[in-house]
Amino acid sequence: MRSGAAARPDPAEAAAVPQPRPREGWRVQRRVIGALILRELHIRFGRRNLGYLWLFAEPLLLGLAVSAMHALGARGAGPRSAISVFAFFAVGYSLYYMFRAVVGRAANGLAGNRPLLYHRIVTPLDLLYARHLLEAAACVMVVALVSFGVTVVQGLAPDDPIKMLAAVALMAWLCHGLALLVAAGVERWEMVERLTHPLIYLQLPISGAFFLVDWLPGPMQELALYNPTVHVFELLRDGQFGQRIRTTYDIGYVAACAAALQFLGLCAMHAVRPHIQVD
Image (cartoon, rainbow, N blue to C red; front, side):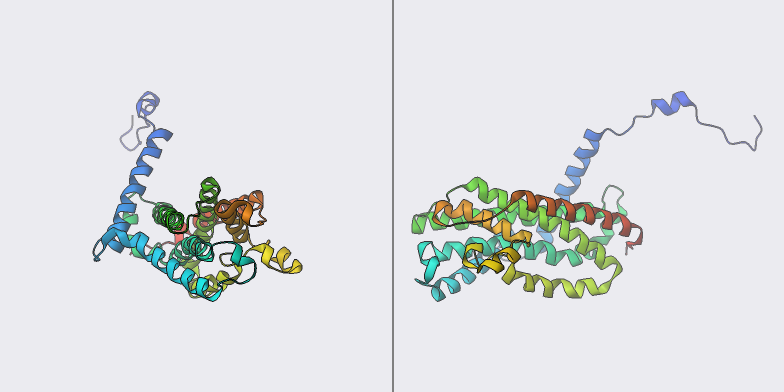
């Protein structure tokens, strides 16, 4: 062999090198996401007075305040008198808080964690997955606490908790895909970050958190049902009140919208990943 020639790898030696298995890669990713969740908890809540309890206390207090104001203003009014107005708004806003938290915080979801990307096993998607799972878990706990409180105080147990959990899962899926688009957009255009928060607040009155489709006039009902979050809240109300109200929703439509947002979000993150600068 000439001294200037590069030695070719032995095929037998190459075959002997262990290849990463999908199960092992999944185990590593779970550990990474778990560590990121603990880090997020410590940074956001670990140094405050109530500690990790703020994860649930913040949305719970906001939900109770909003529902109390609506309950006082709508006492004995029209179709709302047939249900618990307090429970209607408390559970509804608790679910909307997840939309607000996941999508609203997606704008800086990568900014505060860029140094972690120096580790090869940590990816931008891992950072977002950890944050979104944390917000979804908090929402489940808040909805469960509010439902339990309404059951104890007012004697109104949820009609179908499985439907309520399905609504939370669908909302988390929708929020995740939309948050991926926001996080990717912020890396290329600063305007995306400035527009995100105003659009979230503009979404609140049309999201379905504070109304039923059945309360709207006929033409408005069709327009409202184009918004996938309206279907999610209708499913939530169906699980909460059952036959006491009339709900309209299409789970297939919500799933199709969530899958489309997930696909577009993953494509956007893949396209923007080479442009993510690690500080």
